[in-house]
Length: 196
Image (cartoon, rainbow, N blue to C red; front, side):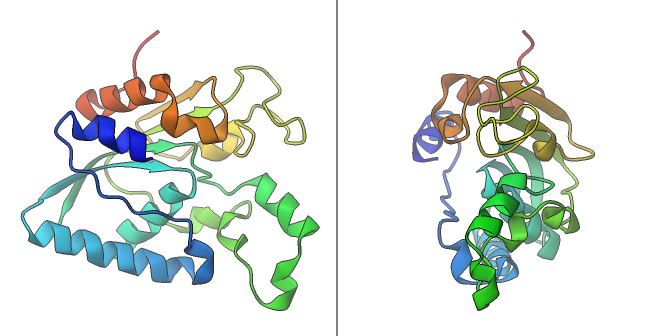
C-alpha cells in the first residue's frame, strides 16, 4: 500500500498507514478498537471527513472499526481492493491443512466464509475493486469461480456498495497496479469507477 499511498498523497490526500500484518497476535475487535481510537484522535486534530483505501483484510478491519465508533468524524468514500467481505474459502482450506486452531490460536477465524458478515457496512459510498480473470475460472484453479488467487469475486461483494468492478489482476498485485490506482483515484473523486 505504500506506493498507492505516495500516489494519493500527490493528489492532496494524507496517508495514514494502518498495517494489518500483526492482526493474528490479538483479536480483531481489539485491533478495531485501537484503529477507531486512532481515527478519533486524528479527527480531533481537525480532520472532519475521511476517505479510505483498504486492501484485502484491511477492509474487514475498517468495517469493524467504523462499527465500533464513528461519532467524531464522517466517512465520505471507501475503496476496498480485493476485500474478503463475506469471508474466504481459501482461509477455510488453509485452516483445514494447518489446524493451529486446535491449539487455541485461530488467526484465520475472522476470514472464514460468513465470518465478516457480522461487521457493519459503513453508511457511505463504497467502491469495491477486485481481481479476476473475467472468465468462469480464476487465477487459482483450486477455488471455484473467478478469483484473484486468494479472494473469489463473489466473496468481495458487499450489499449496499456503490460500485463493483473486476480488473485482471492477481491479489498481491492490486495495490501496485496502474489500473487499480486509476480506478481508485476516479472513485475517490467522483464516487464511480471508470467506464470502459
